[in-house]
Amino acid sequence: MKNKIIMFWAIVILTIISITVIILKPTKLGLDLVGGSRLVLEAQATDNVAKITPEMMDSLQYAIENRVNKIGVAETVVQRQGEKRLVVEIPAVKDLNKAKKYLGETASLEFKKEDGKGGWLPTGLTGKDVSRANVGTSPAGQWVVELTFNDKGAKKFGDLTQNMVGKQMAIFFNGELKSAPVIREPILGGNCQISGGDNGFPYEEAKETVDLLNAGALPVPAKIIEENTVGASLGADSIDKSKKAACIGLGLVMLFMIAYYRAPGLIADIALCIYGLMLFALFKTIPVTLTLAGLAGFILSVGMAVDANVLIFERTKEELRAGRTLYTAINAGFDRAFTSIFDSNMTTILTSIILYFLGTSFVKGFALTLAIGVIVSMFTAITVTKNFMHLVFGTGELKHPALFGLRKDEIGQAYTANETKREKAKFGVLD
Image (cartoon, rainbow, N blue to C red; front, side, top):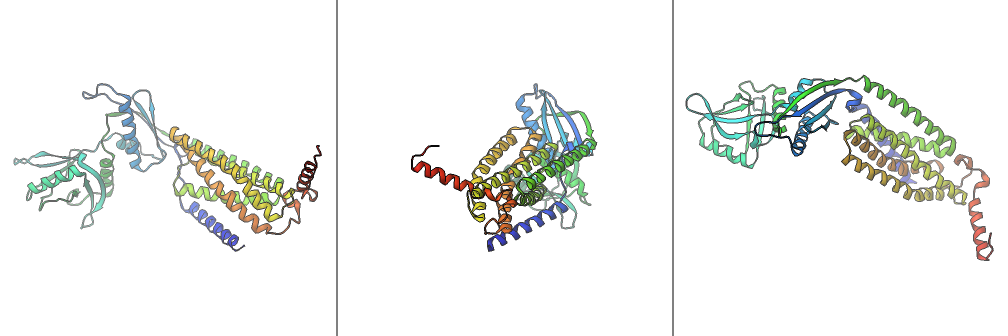
C-alpha cells in the first residue's frame, strides 16, 4: 500500500508540473492555424548550369529547409512543385521581406590584403573556409561575429597571419568592408572575430550575418516568382471548431464511461484528464508545432486512451464474474488486457513512424502527435488508472457490484458455469 501512496503523489506532482508548463510555455501553431507567409521559388539556369536536374532540386530543397530553420521557425513546409519550383510555407512570419532575404540571399565573406596602391587583393580565404559563426562580445562589450574555421581554413588563416604581421587584413561581407585590423601576431588557433568597425555591430546585424554565414550558399540560383500571406482567420475558425469537436467528443466519451462502467468509468475519466494535461505539456516542452492535422492526431490518441480502459474494465468484470476477489480481479484485468493494449498501440506507433518518415509535413504533424499520444496513453492507462483503482477499492471483497455495473447474482457465475462444464467433461457427459 505504501508504494501505491508514493505512486499517487508522483502522479499528483507530474500533473502539477504539467499544468505549470501549459500555463507558462506558449503553444506553437502551424501555418493553417496561425497564418504566415507562402513563397514560390523557381530555380534559374545559368551559364554554368544549363539544365535544372532533379538532383539539383533535391539539393536546393535541402538548402532552403536549412535556411528557414535558421530563422527559428518550426513546421515550415518546403515542397516541390513541378520540375523546378519549390513552395515554401512559413508559419507566424509576418515580415515577407525578412523571409525573402533569408531564402534568396547568399552570404559572401572574403579576407583581403593590401595591394600597395590603396586597394585590396583576394587572399583565397573565404566564407567556404568557415565551419561555424556565432554572435559574441568583444572585451569592450561590443557585439562581434566570431568565426571558427575548418581544418583547411585554419591552416590558410594561420599562414596568412604569419606572413602579414604588421599589415592590415580586410574583411568584406557581401562586398562591404566591415573591418581592417592590423595583424599583431600570428593567429594559429583557427578562430577570429569580425568587429564591425569602431562601434561594433548592432545585435540584429551581427545575428543576421551569423545566420547567413551558417546557412551557406544555394546550390543553384533561385528566384521568388510568387509571394503572399495566409491570414489567421481560417486558423481561428479551425481552432474554434477543433475545440468544440474535442469538447463534445470528450464529454460524450466521459459520460459513456461513467454510465457503463460506473466507478471505474469515473476513475478512467480522471485518468483521461491527467493524460490530456501531460500530453499537452509534453507537446509544449518538445516543442511540437500543432497543425490541424496534428490536432486530429491528438484527438485520435484520446480515443485510443479510452479504448485501453475499456479493455481493462471488461477483463476486470470477467474476473469478478469468475468469483475472484476485487484486488485479484483488478490485477488480473490489467495483466490480461496489457497484451492486447501493447499490440494495438505498437501497431499504431509503427504506422506513425512510417507516416512520419515518408509523409509530407502535415502528415508528419499528424503522425508525431499520434505516436506521442499513444505512448503517453499507455502510461496513464496502465499506471494512473491501476493506481487509482487500488487506492479507491482497496484489497477487500466487492460489496457493491453495482459500482462496476454488475448485479450481485453475476458475481461468481462464470466460475460456477466453468466448474460445471469441467465436471461434466470429467465424467464424459456431453452437453
